[in-house]
Image (cartoon, rainbow, N blue to C red; front, side, top):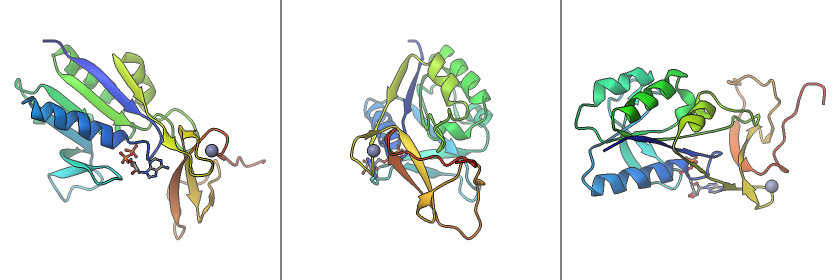
Length: 189
Ligand code: ADP
Ligand code: ZN
């Protein structure tokens, strides 16, 4: 039995978590030994869930670094799921390759682009080395066309290119948008 890498990408709200959860649940039903991971936002809980925007969920282990995956798998592990892959360091790609070489089916889900429409962290390299890639689309919140980008909004207005990641006192939100409706305001616009 040989391993492989499968990646699910797309903008926010495109159903990446839903798809990851679907694949992992089917594997569990088929009696596969499945372990799911997600980036740790805080370390208060040892066990959390991957939860989709539509409410589906599956148990996942929060980890700070992709290296920690090795602490939670053994020779019986057949399937490894990783959500929010864009938040891990580049090494997550080498680890995915190593796991697949060892015979594990690796399924990773995450953002392929940031809100500026630029390739996001380790995801582009993971796409290059994966056997299978599913690029999902959301529905554009402005025009209803397929949306492959994520719009960042600050107090309801399109974010500027150089806006800091954390804006104190501002209300930040995100929505799925198509190429035509996605707005990035650069300093000299
Ligand atoms: P992702 O992991 O890609 O952010 P989720 O799997 O968490 O996506 O959520 C997908 C769900 O989000 C959809 O099934 C739908 O219920 C909801 N949703 C909210 N806004 C949109 C949108 N603009 N287009 C499509 N689905 C949306
Ligand atoms: Zn649009």
